[in-house]
Length: 471
RNA sequence: GGCGCCGUCGCCAAGUGGUAAGGCAGAGGUCUGCAAAACCUCCAUCUCCGGUUCAAAUCCGGACGGCGCCUCCA
Image (cartoon, rainbow, N blue to C red; front, side, top):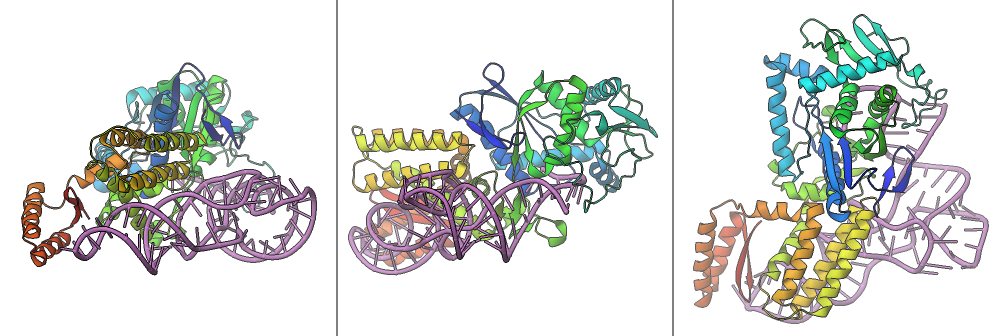
């Protein structure tokens, strides 16, 4: 059974869906005003692996919602600068996000709502009005605020200490007037030059926190939902406020388990525009790295530890992934025959270790170790000629199953299937080189290999023939 | 000021009471026309100091070092 760390209780807990076999999960998605960076994607990749673990290791159904925040200060400012309507502006960044997500092998969630869709705005307005009826709000200059003093449980998730947090804490300087600095806005009153909607609250636009509460409740059904996930920085105030809104309106707990992914650092520093270390997928690709290697790197550490992104780390990830893919390629050249018990045992041991690792709070680092243990055993067996095509199928299926969760091997294979030059040309050249080798014209053979290497293609001469692969 | 996390081999990273997984890099060897791939062997006592225990990287206390949150942020 899966054990998951719950931020609410600060401990690992056995996890099962509240009702039936379906997990209802919400994860906070991107604000679509720019290209998402690799730190954003660490969170999304980890949530993707959690999703896949729930499906393929635990055998649950998953109903997941991930939102696009397409209205806030940044998107409004961006649209104004670009001189295009807000919707057109955010359309472009949503498209960019989807491309990057696909390149990283992220599965598409069942629901990907946009905050500014009418159904969602209506849900937000209804939620605000429910809070108003329950006495949790006040109005000021056309805006509606949540009064946290009306909810004694406020601060439970973030473990806020009412006394201790005064000194040294930076004061929230908001353009809107609030009774208590920690009160937060639910609905921002209409302002010139800003988009505005009115579904009963009065004209304006939603505050940031309300969209997640409203869309989670609308799309995932009766609270509590099973899992709510996001980056650690969202614990406060975003998730704390989501809880306040949902529970203030419904009177029921909002989410059973809160999962938070630690931050990605770059060369030991927090990513920031002023340091110039905010990288996107395009930046990583421009350095000659595969998306699969980035996904691998993001999975190589446990999701609750800070992960330090470095370019040498990317190099190491490329090599590690190559080891798995090369092993798979060797399996293709194994002779037919019956199964060998030691191979089957190695596969069984790996499956067991892999599952245990993921059930232990999604320990991807340990799960990867199980994969590499299998790779070593299989390679040794291939050298000892004790692997048949029958065994190869068993091994391949195991690694395919592992990759249903990791999502990294298939990604790499797909990338490598698109070499920098036409496949037919590569194969023609390889054949020409084979002919040279037959004539024992090794000078020519080596020259051809060198030329291909310069064009990004590496050759491996094996007993069964020559294999080419992308550098 | 308050709350919290971390410090494991050159690099990355599991392990959280029973005597240090895995990956990358490195050294030697086997195989190979060469190379690659692969295999075999080698390569740490866990920041430091005390304490608890038959037994600690793992628990407790302290020191040093790094980091996060309390503000928009994945």
